[in-house]
Amino acid sequence: MKYRLLAGGSVLVVAAVLSACSASSGSAGDGGDGRTTVDVWLMRDSVSAAFQKEFVKGFEAAHPRIRAKVQIQEWDGIGQKITAALAGNDAPDVIEVGNTQVAQFASSGGLLDLSDSEGELKGEDWLKGLAEPGSYEGRQYGIPYYAANRVVVYRTDLFERAGIDATAIRTREQWIEATTKLNKGDTQGIYLPGQLWYALGGFIWDEGGDFATGSGGKWKGALDTPQALRGMEFYARLQALGRGPKDSDEDDPPQAEVMAKGQVAQILATPGLANTVIENNARLKGKLGFFPIPGKTADTPGAVFTGGSDLVIPAAAGDPDEALTLVKELTGDTWQKKLALAMSYVPNRTTLAPAVAGDPGASAMAAGAANGRATPNTPGWAAVEAENPVKDYMTAVLVGGDAAKEAAKASQDITRAMNAGS
Image (cartoon, rainbow, N blue to C red; front, side, top):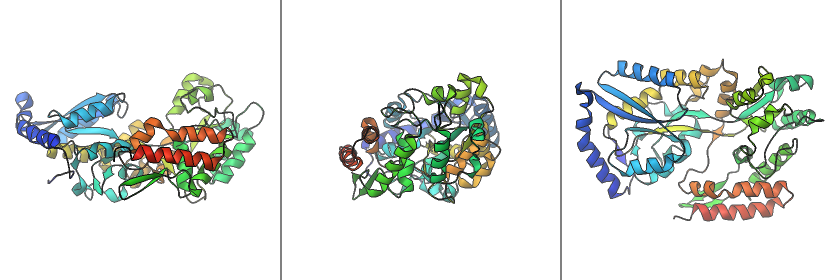
């Protein structure tokens, strides 16, 4: 297997690769049994203890010369920890990273280029929302691992009482009509906080817009385009059909707790949040359902922000060939199906969606994930999220500000943040 380092990679990273390679022969003798140990960092809650045990046992049985050593990492502070590992000579062999983090790590020269494996891993079927942010400057550094995205979590009893068939809601306008009907008396048609910018992104993408556009290595905020303004207009229409706060996001207050109070017909969330709702109100058990966020037309679900993870191999990995073997297994058909069923995730390829057909929440996610997207694929997007002028823009519009003027201001802030380091 041939690997290419990112052009322009730092001398520090190259030196780390040489150091790690010279040390790798020692790691192969770990335990005195002649096996190579592949060190793997997976993130908290990306796999259950039972799945981890099953995978390691199955992988080692299929590859008796390789030992898989999995360490679970916490999301809090993981960016700094990975950055330090990539620059050192003791990096793990495989790391799970958030899909939107790949460009940041690839731009430093710290990751191996895995483009040569794309065909073998059936990359033509990868979910766009995982594959696109896993690439950088035309090369593939992150191999799609699993996806999760928002769906409509709804109260089946309130829909039935209102005479609404959730399966018949296929378009945005049908959704607005149903939500308006539900928004009566003490019941909120939908609880949609004013700063759920991931959802706004989906509406903007449906209109053909984006948060920013890039050309010649420079980026320009695009919230002030006609397409993005139409996305914000729809968000405002939907948000008005409930009593969600205009100046906070889904965590303030936690929307699962709000829905658990019993007066909310719908929220936008990953299906797993339904469990939290029930934990807060056991009377809602059996009364929560799921459907994909509707699109502009009935033939295509609404665009959604695809969250999830990619697997990367550090340039400083001591055993890159064995690391790639593990990545191929964990992202291949057998273990992708097992992972999806065990964790209610969306598999990394559209062709594997039938694996979760029996899971109502995961199947709704899979339908939406087929039209999944990601934020602009550039290291500069991290600065935008840190400052997040998108949230301020949304609040300004929802409290009555002029949408075009507020969008122009937010777009300037995005432009400045994305190009600050260039």
